[in-house]
Image (cartoon, rainbow, N blue to C red; front, top):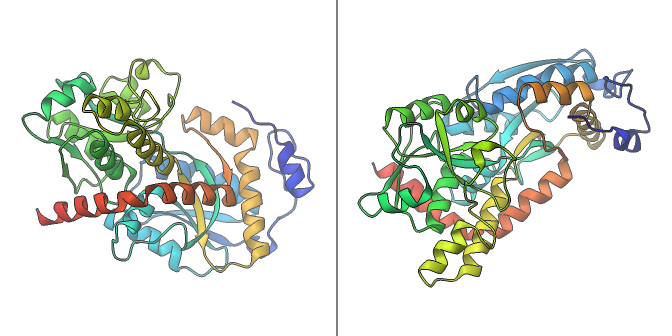
Length: 357
């Protein structure tokens, strides 16, 4: 997988040497020789951590600085996200955020949850979130028709790490669109523990980023049941025959038609969900940074993301890239919000129900 880097020259008036970044000299003089914190609001070993540790060595080389990756977990990612928000806007603190999860928790009225659309300077999107509902290898749930039969006797039980995650709102909102009663089991430290709970049969289902879970899927530990998308996430054998949630022929529209409901409305709601979920993994900095420094950091980061060496390293690590500049990423996030504000009440009620247990 390779990208042509000509657009970087248009941005910066520079040519990119093969296999290298665009900067022979330090592009952001105030950061040269300094140490930059790269905050990951989740534990070591997950998808956000993997992306951050992939980015750090390339970005520090380009900036002529030192980048220290810090995992600051707690409160479902809110502690780390708040750390980035509250840092000095001097370029010395940046981080990676689950934009859609934080946004939905914020819209649902959760206190102290940072809003990614208003509380940060978004430098870039590194990847979209492409979620699938999965079950475990020994589960009797072979397809979504089995799920539909199961909920005739009891709610569908799912695992979630926290209420500010894409996994949580993907399942809550997807289940609402499909008229499936669900029950959340929260408190798992991370995705590894969620997968183990699924394999032990403690829960029925979980929502995972397809590319983050590709190893478990290919090993047969996880079986995809539903793509939270309007078009196939990937040309991969594991997704063959796995239905889409959205689209005119998606499960939301088809199951709504079965009950004589509003199929156009169901398709529109599914589109809103997939748009917001796809807003992705965002690289952000605190608000208030001098514009020249912010633009320099963004341009340097975009050059890194399109560096052939970085792209090759991502490919080897099986980390999918879907890069966008900060402004474009912000617009996508806001489009998702505009389409999804009606979901806030559903999420809010689900969170309250979880807290009552």
